[in-house]
Length: 174
Length: 295
Image (cartoon, rainbow over all chains, first blue to last red; front, side):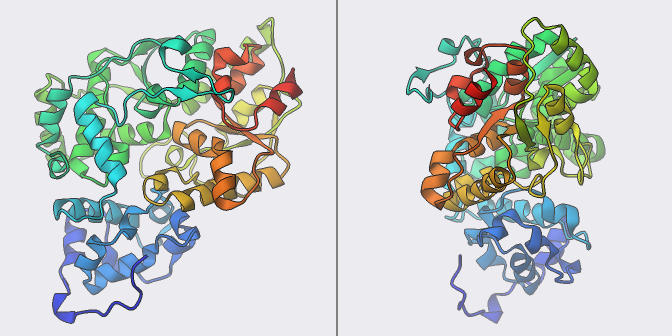
């Protein structure tokens, strides 16, 4: 997904970032011995989108900024296979979540629009989307009412928003 | 048996068929569903935005259920279930985060006492009700219609068996509860090599083509192995596996030879409940052939 020929600027490397991840999460990229078990099981890797072993190596190498700005970290299927089967306890999925959190904090432009829309909806109604009209195979339209479903009990979205503003969601809630 | 039902976001706003069929079927097994009040998102899709924000949303569900004095909280979605279970684990084991979350919840007059059982439809049906009881109810049902003409593949979904670091509804390497529940309806099933593969749904937000490729590959494998259809227990998985038209258009894979539906719909059909009462009119996969086959 990135330009494979990008040239590493050694002065820009963040050699402490791996330690920072180790201290703040259950992930530890430093113990990776590059067996690539994670990549061989990765759902997203099977369709050539995410190269999780590469991301682990990039982090150990100090390429923090280029990883945080990459679209690739947002293509994880969260299937957790890497996490389950890594023989070294690197916990690549926890690392990916942490990298995504840090990208949000840094205000990168690569945060997928779909997530921003979900958050907008949560602070408005509490759910990631409003109830939709759905179409049957015969092209009839249905909503909750027409299907005999009870009214939804919605939360106090204002209180929810106030609380979410005290978390890292504030970087996305405008 | 009173259980508090938490629907999450996708089921009550789009995947109505799961809710319709669950509400239709579960009371036949002595289950009294009580809706969770003031529920919001469980946070799962937004873990990547912020860990604390996710943990607050997930913990909030536990606190709300406890406020309703629920003994059992029932989630139908794999994502909601893993989110709430992980939150419970963190609240129990991380003092620092527990305090932060307690502060946020206090703003809404909520607190976590930690006495609740969290169930997913899968372990609720298999462990709390049990295949024996389900079989009895089916056999005593006047309209019992054994699904013996169908060979069905189980699709568990990732979040129902992983991570193994916390309790999950079924085994990491060799889950078997969904197969047991399928067999109770009279249908046959078999374990197949692609059984524990992902549906691709979480990638839909960023790389839709590849996401369809993943669901297409799984459906193609199921179809090639001679199954009539696939049974799911998660709204994200079901939505992916039903989108045969989009899958065919994007990937060129013709997966229209099989159908996909929720387990609650299969169970309802076996009880002789009309397909419209189970929300099957909303199904976007090749369901007609199956309905003809069993009628």
